[in-house]
Length: 609
Image 1: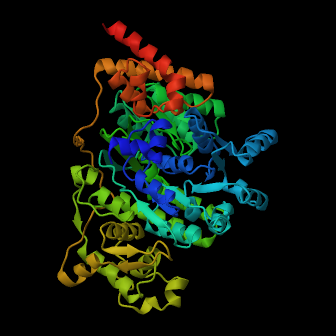
Image 2 (image 1 turned 180 degrees about the vertical axis):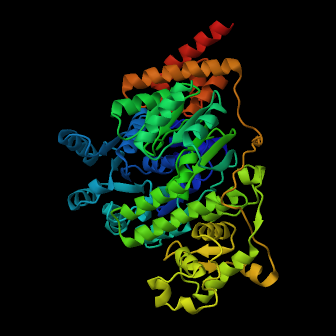
Image 3 (image 1 turned 120 degrees about the horizontal axis):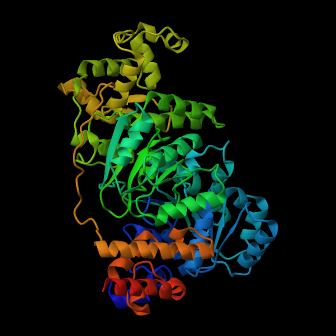
């Protein structure tokens, strides 16, 4: 498309005039085009790929009212504030505001003044709200964090499943469901529940090749965390912890040892959280110790590492959390500690959750997939991408590629496992298969007569934990498959059948092995760098951004993203016309912020000359 044609295309006009971008990021335009043609869309796009723009651009092109369903009040408020700073009439109705404010917002929406109205599923899926909305000029519905439809059980947030009614209530309105983390089972579940399978699905590649993946056995988490962070002097990073208490302990320990660190968790006041978030966004070499309450919507491009002091809840959660590192394309690290105590804790969380047995079963299977990743004897990235339905060669940028473990021959044990799977009908999960191998006399083994098969008791020479680890590594290596959507039954995959018939070998990593060697991280080509002078200008631009954010009582990154400030530091615009060419500067921000940032750039040039 020529420049002239692009300028006449309404979607490109909105992209440039409102959001300040010349081009869409990979994957965005296909989603936008499908929605503008009136089609339902399921978009699975990695963290940091610009999902919000996929519905915000068509919302402004289509006109009328767009309803945005969002699960988290903080995330909803951030998006509303970001749109307002870009000159877009956006509002949110939610329980954190008083009734008068919500009434005034509704009047703006019903009179046609509001273009995007954000609602929680609980607020939207009331008969009164639905009846009122059907009378308005609704042109588009967007469901953010759509994996919640599948992964949050009806006992927790039943309104998420009730969203399936929207397709019938608004039959001529395109609906887009967006998420950063959805495996094939979750995608199918969303498509069936929300759209009755009448949907176009777009899956953008999950690979983040610039991020080195490492899993380390947990021994002394405080010492391991401190050693890792101190090995990254001058870098910004995030340390994820399971509890609020551990978050506070991690931040305090880092500060005691000379690292600039802050804590962030849901138990802190809103002002405290916002202050710490703004400091993290503005100051260099800052580490945030946080629970998973931190990160939604955060766009700090130069996060160099994400350290998991505790096991995340699933591969989806892990992918989303470590994806906050390396958004600038430069090398970054994802380092996870993995201990038996974490596994017990995660299983307890699932069992104690107020949810149905079907959801608990799926969550145990997702946890099993994460454990398979942790114990993978070969390339971790292959295991991770395979979980999301992608294939890849060995990456050369994970611990198992850079520092291969000494593997043991487990072919005979693999055959014992496969014999137990085959002789029990290939429909039972790992726990039952291990019981059969150990010769257990429990009710389930006796009920199915599995104490009488040839595989019964053939694994008494190993402990239960060893057999569980072997099964996870067989799954990770593609020898076995697990039915995550059903009851977690193990089946023998093509690779496993080749082991049985063609003599293929299986090598595994003993669970007790601890590797200490460190190797140099592979540097991707073309990683952006700033000169020393530009770095000092960037610091000044971030300080101005923070001051402007405080004046407007919004998080700093909503004024301009890090990506925009880096582009500004490189370009050093001299006037408003040049400032308008900076990536991420739309018409409203040009009007509101150009002079202040141009003054900082002029003063910096004068001081340097």
